Amino acid sequence: MQPQNFHSTAVNDHIENISQHIADPALERLFRQCYPNTLATTVVFKTINNLPDTFVITGDIHAMWLRDSAAQVWPYLAHIQQDPRLADMIAGLIRRHSACILIDPYANAFNDGPAQSEWQSDSTTMLPELHERKWELDSLCYAIRLAHGYWQSSTDRKPFDAQWLAAMKLVVATMKAQQRKENRGPYSFTRSGSWQADTLACDGWGNPARPVGLIASMFRPSDDATVLPFLVPSNFFAVISLRQLASMVVDLFYETAFAAECTALADEVATALQAHAIVQHPKHGPIYAYEVDGYGSALLMDDANIPSLLSLPYLGAVARNDEVYQNTRRFALSTDNPWFFKGDLFEGNGSPHTLAPMIWPMSIIMRAMTSDQDKEISHCLHMLKNSHAETYFMHESFHVHQPQQFTRSWFAWANTLLGELISKIAQERPHLLSAKDRHVSH
Image (cartoon, rainbow, N blue to C red; front, side):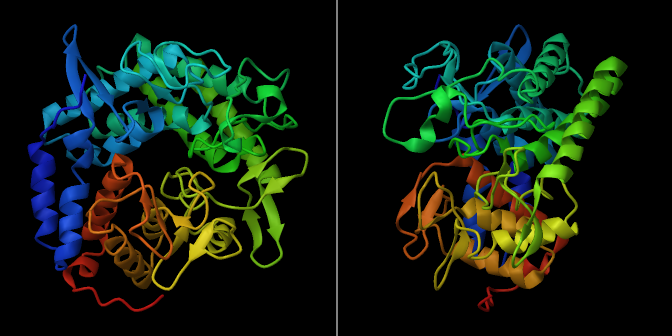
């Protein structure tokens, strides 16, 4: 089924309210186009047995990523009290996430029912419902994040039924299996082809890791293979997600034993992060590594996709004023990070997924999201306003010197995320929107 244009009066009212406070016409147009992009182009919403069901494609790929779909609708949670149909749409996505996880907790992307996939020849346990089966720890965390956000924003408990609880128990069991304490677990993956990051080392099991309490993630949020199996941003994300899940299952199901299991796992991962994820950088001091293996090896970089090290306060995983985070942030936003690119007009993080020297608008948005400095936030807005190559949409990435050279013209998550940023600025720092662009080089 093709996505339909989903209308929300509450979202439209929000767009009108914010837009009248944006002095810069180009920024206003960018906000008007980007914020509703997920609703306008990616949502398939229907009812099945009188219950809402929602499938959200990522944009130019007709498949639903657990991560992307949860992030795409996240900013709309702010409007569900004013729009019951919007609430139903998000509730339907929570239900769909539960169904997908029960089909396969190791899959990152799903078809809308059984269908053909271009990746069906991958050497892993592919099912017809799967678009892709890359084990990405953050995918399961995003499903929890959306459910928790809905639970906090709504009095509707209908999505939280026996199916949802079964899915969440499978989530925790999967995370524990991927601690790899006794064996490597059931997941392996290889793909034929020439793209190194699309397949796993060691005959599909990934590089070795010492079981230290962290959770292995074989792929990054970019869908690239990890080099070292313990992906630090995703493990931080797992800690906050497990704590959120614990609070939900007590309130919704009185499942105190399961809540204790969630909390114990969160505590174990948090302790392991402090022991194994912090490394001493010669310039920036103690920083968080991007990946570690439990043996003492660490990969020092940051990738633009979220969860990133830069995004940890945005996800609620660390405090913004945390000293190690601040050191890490300075590292990530400097040329000491091999995936940070800086030109005359633009600077930001990219990803091995799009090669060098491509900046992801998502990283610029996240820099602004995690800043408390007007000058830095204005600098980010200026770059975003000038990087869309006259399309007035965000892209996956753009060339550091030539924004007209970009990847993915239809990437709904980046569009919605920009709308979330401008909404946040309108609430917290409206003076940055009410003034004409008076950019000063940062």
